[in-house]
Image (cartoon, rainbow, N blue to C red; front, side, top):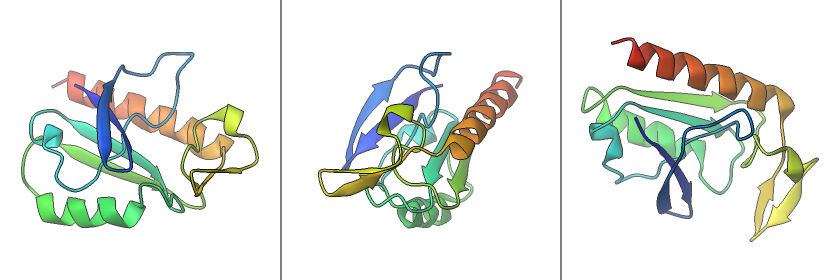
Length: 122
C-alpha cells in the first residue's frame, strides 16, 4: 500500500505515518492512477482550499466500483495541513489557509490505522 501527498496537482509517494509523522497520508486530484493498483484512503479537510474536498468527492463518483478499495473521509471545519501541529492556529501559505485541528488530526490517525489494518487483514 502506498500513500500520496499532493500539492497543486503534483504528487510524491511518501512513507507510511510513524509515531513522529501522523496525519493525512493522502491527497488526490483527478487523474491519479495509483488507486487502481493499491488500497487508498483520502483524509481531507472540508475547508481545504489547496486540495478541495469537492474534487475528491467528484473523483470518487467517477471511479465508483473501479480499481482497488478507496475510502474518502472529509473532516468538517478542517483546513489544509489539519494534521500539522507546527501550523498552529492558522496561517497563509502561497495564498492558501493552513490550520492545525487537533480533533481532525487524531481522528485521521485512527481512520488511517483502521483502514490499513482492514486492508492488510485481507
